Image (tube, rainbow, N blue to C red; front, side, top):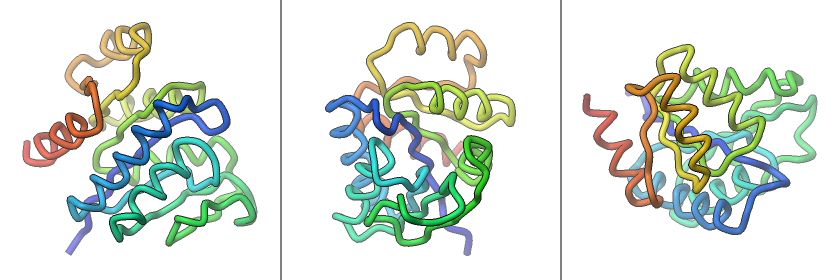
Length: 163
């Protein structure tokens, strides 16, 4: 039986404290929902926080790494997929996720949202950047959803998975 994979994308080194807190809670809630967490797999920022949150609830975590080795892998990643693709691995992140949650905002996160829009994936934005919310909703109003907190994001995921 296919497992539901929820991708959590967000900034690495430039993640805010709020991004990290939200990512940890998202990971935990994803695991508690019985879903698999997919991130960029590195040991920093949203990727690391979400993976740690999922592991705190005994969840399964997958990390899609940009490098040719696993030296930067989060200790909370169960399955590390080494790609040697750099930022091109963002497409793998998006295509492998049933729903994408963008937690915070940065250039890499924006590219993942854009890739998701191109392949008609549903994206939930969890950030406090009104400009990015307006921009992405203007590109794909029926694919971009806004969540004010991690609980609301998970409620949206549940709705999107059943439609």
